[in-house]
Image (cartoon, rainbow, N blue to C red; front, top):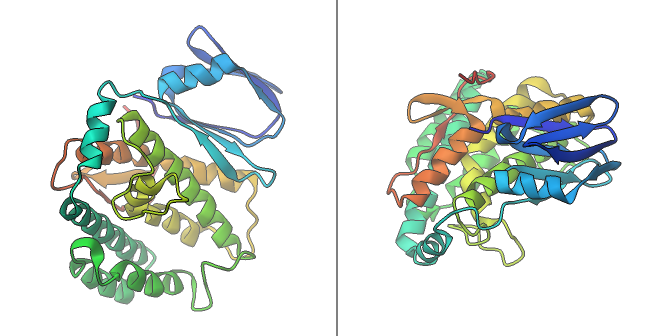
Length: 296
């Protein structure tokens, strides 16, 4: 099982030799391709061979590319990795509105429950209780938009009354956006590996969004990033390389899925597997205190 997330911050040459990803720079290192879950290339002075890109795609490894501000702006995904992609595509197009509404209800409920748990872990238990009651009341398709109602209460409670998600100068917002981008890319990778079309969503349906389904499916994982930022980051914090590395590493943090602890990345895969099987109940995550996952 792929588990390793590699971040490259200095100029280097990336190639592939004998089923190993070879990184030649200030120091030369190599990793077995089969171990690589994702590769984040932050440096703008890296050279990647087409053979390496091809090998990473065949392995199902997500490759993040960054812009001039060192923020992920693109991801590469495997093409037609699933042996029955046509079958999966037909099933996806055949989803009924009732099925979409049921799954979206589950996703929103899980998201709000995890937001409540995040608040509880931060000692904000009174508001956590309110959010738990909001989660229970989520209806099919979330027609009352309890997701937005919960968010309006959640963020000011977690980060302070003056906090808004629109404040670009707040270092916590920069960290949240970076962490969410990593989650989105990892979920998009899982969906592609299992043959799903990422732009055909359950709830999100923007014609300008190529990742509607990824945005739907990642929602319950956002509180993982929120908990890290709330407990570790101050308003004036800079989004430096060390912080980015920590946010990238959240893919290896423990989370509950089916009463067992898995890494965030593998819990996402289990969730996509449940969607692929057509299960009425998705395998959804439950937030736990931040702890590095131990791979056996």
